[in-house]
Length: 199
Image 1 (tube, one colour):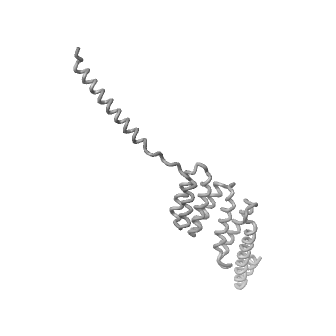
Image 2 (cartoon, rainbow, N blue to C red):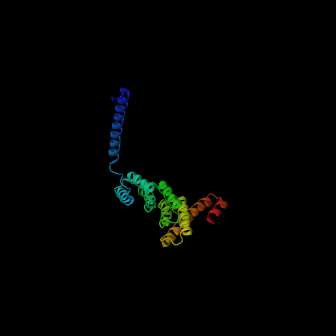
Image 3 (cartoon, rainbow, N blue to C red):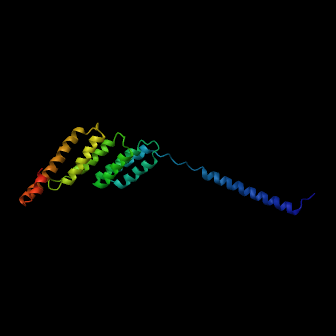
């Protein structure tokens, strides 16, 4: 008995749709068989960024350090990357940015073994800006404050002997400045102002 024409048409339509579905499935499977994304190697990327710092390619190095901060699932290299970002700004003599990045490190990782290093670097940035007694008061004052903070927050820091000498130097610069200003006021017969400075 012959099938009605309508049934034949539906069977044919079904076969075509089935064939199209199978072809689509095969193509979707083959596109998924591409090479899987390689796992992020924080250690390798950290070495690469350090090489760029040595070559003075600071912007490219910082891009990699930022990526390490965001993608290091071990959290071993993320803190070091934050430090190296700050260090790279020091090398580039972008002192304000360096200070901001060191402070960010201390804020995020206050108990890290390199937290005292970050605090020391902040003090040293200001210390390096002391030019003379006449022009170094502001930098000496900031450096003194940061070195005192280092002593207070990290009493076992490895820079103890060095910072004592730095603190003395800061105090000398500040005292010399006060003396110079006191003598200036004395010569101008502004004795009250002179006394305050000299005291």
